[in-house]
Length: 401
Ligand SMILES: Cc1cc2nc3c(=O)[nH]c(=O)nc-3n(C[C@H](O)[C@H](O)[C@H](O)COP(=O)(O)OP(=O)(O)OC[C@H]3O[C@@H](n4cnc5c(N)ncnc54)[C@H](O)[C@@H]3O)c2cc1C
View 1 (cartoon, rainbow, N blue to C red):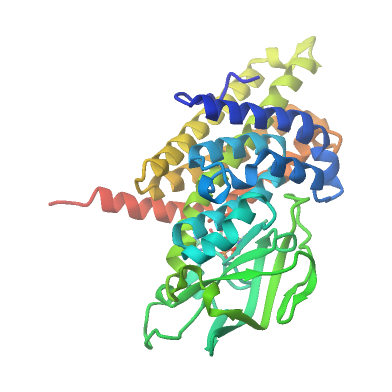
View 2: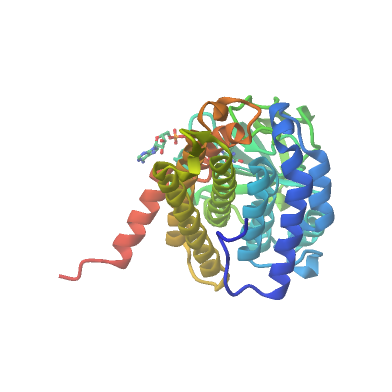
């Protein structure tokens, strides 16, 4: 089943890592994913297995105990994991974004303090920009930090934190007007704070409450929460990078690599949907032959496979561009947009191929059908991707007349 979504030019190490992850997915994730998902149960055993494989430290530099691998290796692992169960890739995704932001923007003390334990999976990361009144429009953030001696006092409500309950480190973006004159652009007066906390729900430390899990249509197992800061005191040395006013750029940098990651998830879910569809089409008979022998169904399979290939190629291209040190916002935006739209379409076609059985919870495609829509929203909706793509195109193709 490995004919689709091949990646040329991988090193022996990359191939070895991917084969280990695929094996883990086939043996440890796929057999239990749907059952756990239906129970909305956190996949602790799977997470322990990922920890053992070193996946929480995949991109963390070796000097901090990680594997020091590239974005491409990471994205290909995410694709494999999402093929097994998208929620599991969600568990490592926010961790990966926070580790990446620390690596790129943290002070030396912050890197030394967090990265080795993040590489081991002992500290797990979540990131928080969204609030109840905003998601796309990050510049409208109202949560606020005010300096008080050697500390900052944080107030405000955050929304939609993936791994909000299970994480022990949250990178939170808030407004911090201190040091920024009246009239400073909103994105220049935002700061990322590194908040250490106990995993769990309720008031996890004075001034910080994680109310409980949001009940979602899909993407179950992984917890998504609100976060309430009410006079939360954070030491000044937990400002990411040590300087206020840089938070917006730091988060956007994190989300940019996160987009490649969401594209990879779309590729993984679409691959699994194709596998389910092509398998079912050869088993189900109508009008005296397997439905795969009806041309309409073959055309569906052809379209699905083409979309799987195209999304994979764009995702790999976006990851490689970042790994080469070049700006990749255009490629990442395109890959995220295309892979999530194609994923939704491939899943829907696989669902249709299953006929009535696709509607039954006994069939895996039912789970995929509820999971795919999240990819259309997370790390920026399709409209936001198109805004990024459009702006970059106009920069590249500026009218010279
Ligand atoms: C399961 C889940 C997990 C999440 N995890 C996290 C997380 O870990 N951390 C985090 O910070 N956030 C997280 N989010 C939040 C997510 O990033 C936002 O939901 C997303 O950015 C969209 O924001 P919104 O929901 O406020 O929609 P809105 O911004 O209110 O948008 C509503 C609609 O309007 C469209 N729209 C908005 N502005 C424009 C425009 N200028 N032009 C055209 N159309 C526009 C949007 O595309 C969308 O269709 C998560 C969301 C979900 C569902």
